[in-house]
Length: 152
Image 1: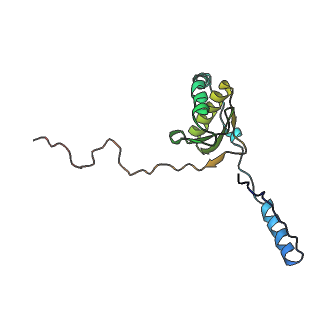
Image 2: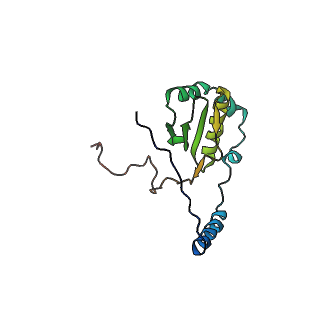
Image 3: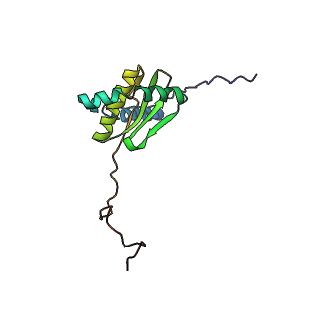
């Protein structure tokens, strides 16, 4: 049996110019700010949305039972990505910064809560910027003049 060597981290303390660089690094590090909490952005659901979310407890349970630990469940149409941490815990990895996505995530949270599964949001969730689809200028139903059936 091969045993892995333990990871040993060596730390060297130096004085003078290196120490000045370290203090500059620490000053810059303090300037970094965390994203606003995702949980604060979730809307309160109305009775209809809450009742609908409670119906999806089977989906929540099936997800943790059928996906392996660490697996990512991408919900591209809803702007949400979830990761299975254990059979009792799911983590929201990303959410798109859009009201529809936050509403969907709030409904997902109710589904998991009703199923008895913990949904982790903060500080794990990364908020992705909303990237609106490109508008080509013409309505989608309009004929583009391409090949088709010609009536004589």
